[in-house]
Length: 129
Image 1 (cartoon, rainbow, N blue to C red):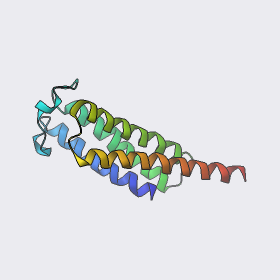
Image 2 (cartoon, rainbow, N blue to C red; image 1 turned 30 degrees about the horizontal axis):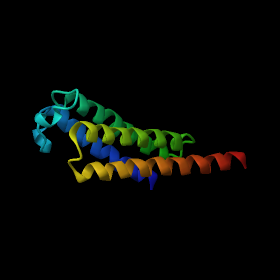
Image 3 (cartoon, one colour; image 1 turned 90 degrees about the vertical axis):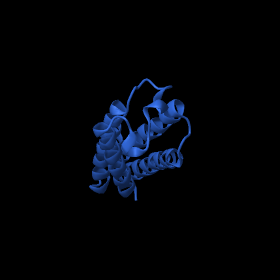
Image 4 (tube, rainbow, N blue to C red; image 1 turned 45 degrees about the horizontal axis):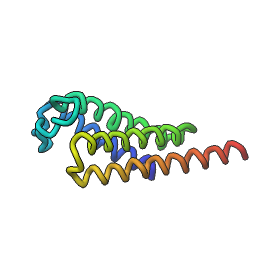
């Protein structure tokens, strides 16, 4: 389940990040640059790059690690889930709570951290056996 979650988040991150990079005004995703007034950004280019790399490609690589059962996949998942939580919290800080997607992805990030912890814990038990 963890690998599928990471791939799901990763695909969304790639699509969203690519959209912001190719149209930094955010109009393609129904956003406006006016909503960035309280943020350090004037458009969505930098957030789009971060979204594409961290929550897109990073999650896809993390999903690959999980699906391949790499022994550090749990640690990677905890880190990626933590970064997703920070991403959503930064959005809420700068843009306000403006979408149900924010709460959904916050929950997914927390779930990823928990599943990563459980995977790491089970891997550690298997190594000590």
